[in-house]
Image (cartoon, rainbow, N blue to C red; front, top):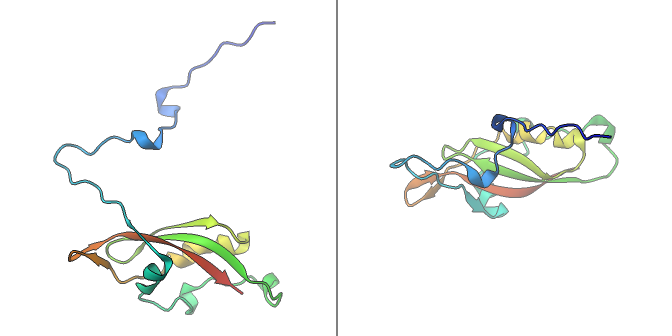
Amino acid sequence: MTNPPQITPPLECLPVPRGDADPAPPGAPAALEPASLPAEQGHALLAIDPQADPYRVDVPGICVGLGVQYVAKVQVCVSPAGKVADVKVVEPSIPLIDEQLPIVLGRWIFHPLVVDGEPMSFCYQLNYRVM
């Protein structure tokens, strides 16, 4: 019995390792990594009430009244303008809640993080609790 011939995929079809990204062109400003803040510091920059309706996750009807607290660990990244740039569920809760997190937390608005007089992007992780 013979083995089938090995097929080599085109380079365009191969994943690019994260560390091999093209460097910035000469003279281009270096991309700044977002500042990593502790949860308390990141949350203190909120410019909205996270308990107000448009900014909080709804508990699905089938989960209401069970006396269960649902917790998801979420990473929120914020642009220098104070708008949410990215939301990632790091440790999920239940799908009915997790699927709402990027949408709802994406509506949050923050005061800018100012470092040396310049607004800068930042990320922080929080334990999002729903009862």
